[in-house]
Image 1 (spheres, rainbow, N blue to C red):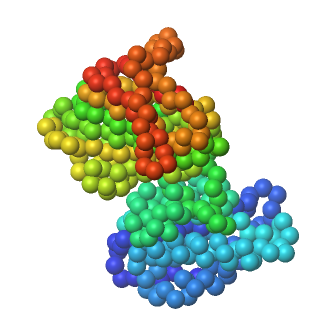
Image 2 (cartoon, rainbow, N blue to C red; image 1 turned 45 degrees about the horizontal axis):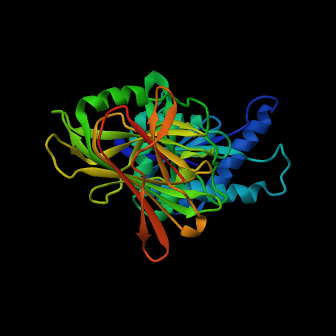
Image 3 (tube, rainbow, N blue to C red; image 1 turned 180 degrees about the vertical axis):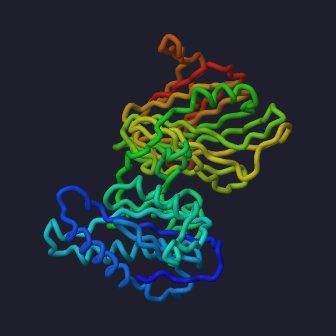
Length: 399
């Protein structure tokens, strides 16, 4: 692939950085060169490369791979990654282990400078390409990783992309830069595992709770649990938080915590967060993703200011609950806590509420128990309310 000369010095582009995996170790120099040539040949055969005007591309050979910058938007690098994924599947058929081409991909958008090297050849340098390479370096074989900003742009283009491009985790790069990365994977595409290089796993819950107590009050919290499958005990969780700000500084983000009885990845939970207008709130950080515990941050489209009324957000997710209980700890005061369990009477569940002593890890049956009523034509709903909940109290419903 030939580098393109463009007369301007600073451009904004969307980059795809492709690197061959396994070019170190016992492999000889000739074999390394042959594989780089083969990657170039496969990429040159991709329709995206063939149909894009050369003047709309920046091409840079990069050691064990190649980097292409597109000037016409973020979709072209994604389409190239998906096409390259399919081309390499075909290429690798009937190849020996030594001949197989394995790659990893990183994508990012941003500005770059077009500069001339000492030989007068055009080169590319700048944050757009530097971060694209760092994103790629995190990945292992088969990973297609994307920076947060570029991923969010792509996810806004179609529901298909929302399904394909999933938030992964926070990763720490050079100079302390921490960035949420997204991973592209699906049916025969990408690598669904979580890469561990530069992975940042640090719970922020303790420090955030300290801040929460200073500027937040819950006017009401409404938790609804609906048993969707009595056999697997799959439950749809819906938590609605009616939030008041007590500080002159607005509330701009929310840290969410989810604990599960079964090992799950963040993307297994079908998480959805929305504001009071039903607008989806973007996940802007995933700082803790353990098999049984998740922590992630969402950012409000419109911050919550002091004195505002009726502001709330909703967190929804699905998970199996084989131990048949849900427990809610209150880090700040709450004027009213409503809890409900929706289920099929054929499941023969017995909803029971307990007051929990967190310090002693003990529970006692609440004096007031859920009220059971019909819900729709075929379901029952157990409802329970507690007013004037004080910081430190916790409640548990078992069924």
